[in-house]
Picture 1 (tube, chains in turn blue, green, brown):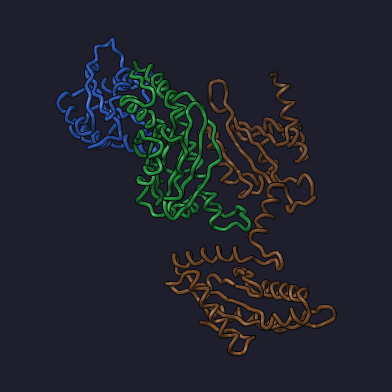
Picture 2: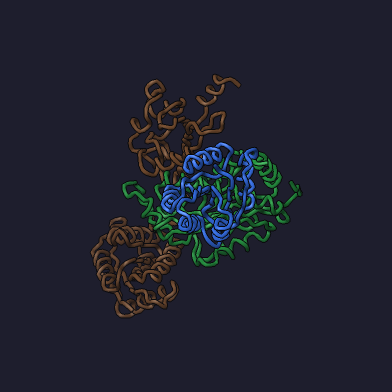
Length: 123
Length: 212
Length: 301
């Protein structure tokens, strides 16, 4: 059961877009972080059920942050949400422990789909 | 949203930045398929300038290159302006080895002509990918002028002066690209004039409406 | 406007119009294309373009098609670099210097109502006449009217280019200055028409004697200049001697008279600190020495 969602993205606009796509009627608690390192710190504190992670970010990029989160908690569900959709980047993100990769821009449909997958995974 | 006649707000800049990110991501993915090369496009940077400062700005941006090859192409639609793709002059030869197909008959044309042709083709595709995806996200379809190529010893003569009326402002969208595993990199500048600003502001607002 | 009205226009316009689907199969082939290719619409519609024009299936053409279909951009095939896409006979053979029609082609996307790209169009423009004019203009600008070899203007721009290239890649580069001995005497004895004839035959002979990679230009009155890229001075001496010997053997007949001439030559080879001017000056000095040490010989400095 998903309760807490963490959004990690350096662009406030991008976080706003993402947030608007998350269903509002399910009582999700949504947290935000502005770079990979802040995302990792926030993860440890909040222990969200799902983390949406951008790839290209200052300080620490999304793949490294994903890796760190997964080291900290091997069960962590990280969904990479990126504009960088070249096969190579997607493979890399998956290799570093992301559950799935979704293309930007996010839409209500793709977010719903991702949340379903996460829910299945958590069981 | 904060509407201002001839300039765009910080927020609009951020939205544009995000849209460019998405557009260039799509462009890079499709480029990998079309030209079979993994192209890395940096996070785009947006600058609002006075048109008369434009040549000086472009020059300062590419000052690390002593000889440059510039592919220039205009695009028209609601979104209109000029694209400048700036390569280090040595890129031409490298691109020939990537794209050149010795079998084609260039007749008496010299290697310079082949280089120019390759720059023009690659430039046309790269610019088309970036401008095409960007205008698509903003709900526009643009047409293009044939590309022109200039190779110069110094950037002085290569950067066009007076492409816009002085006094008007210009939005410069800059990205650094590099062909992975190859020693080819450069800058892409998309410059749009006053005429596009109002349309741009409206399209940005429309784009964000789906995320209210 | 109705589709039939539009088709009437497309079939009347003076350029080729081809519509291709995403699989590069032909959807429309206008009358201009029928006229010039001899292939009717019935024969070609729904067929793959490459079945009829296999030479078009190059990586570059395919790449451009893919780009237009993916990005909706335009692709341009200029006459300068491609000559043509479709091998057609020129519209008229009168005054044209090309065996095949020169074309400038543009490819662009066709979009469906939902803005997705459904295919592409190709516009083929006949630019043979323009290309002919351009060629003539370039010739007038680079060639010497009397002798038909390059003129001084062309030589000087070429010299600048070669000097730059030499400096970048430090490849050998040589120059030969040539002057016809006692040319004034030819003019005085047989008249200017004879002088012109001698200039023409010396130029023609020298041009056939030099190698394909060398350039020869008329530099001034009876002075010629030969630029030898990728050539060290020793090899330039061989070329110089070759030219000298051929001119010496050459017989020109003018109004029943046999007019023989010799030439003197000066050679210089490019050194790092050279400018085009100093490079030329040394060849000129060498030529001067050749003149003063008896003519009909070369000197190298």
